[in-house]
Image 1 (tube, helix red, strand yellow):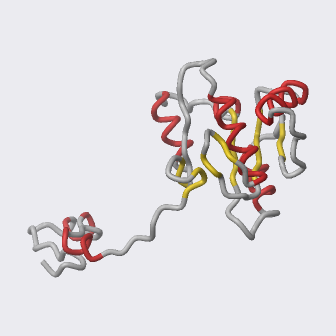
Image 2: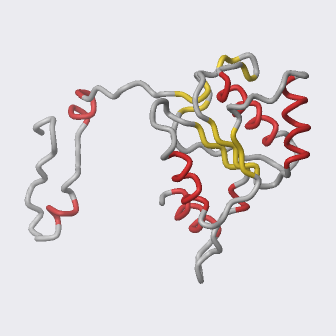
Length: 172
């Protein structure tokens, strides 16, 4: 093996080479230098797509709201200092009054920071709303929290399983 890309032997079929075109070996993998992961919440939540799942009413919305408030100001959530960054909270199961109440409880009486940006309703498709907001923030990697995915999930296509729909949505 070359250690860079494996050049598969001729298996006697013209279809073999395209099927194995991206085959790599351990030597190639060992020679790679991948950059360290970047974290939205240091050591806990890496940047990129992350899903927080659990049964209803266990505090998922409280947790992500605390993270969003901390990110908007460069504060702390759960004892972890969160680097300051633009943060958008899509609180699609809340309204302004409920969100204000939760923010005030989490902030312990401190005012809700002006850097806290949120929406309680979005037009479909939600990706267009997120893209429009992201276009406003280029300096620091922004944070977008969608609470909840179920509010914007497209319907399953005919014959598509729940897993198939989740996979389709998560990879587009």
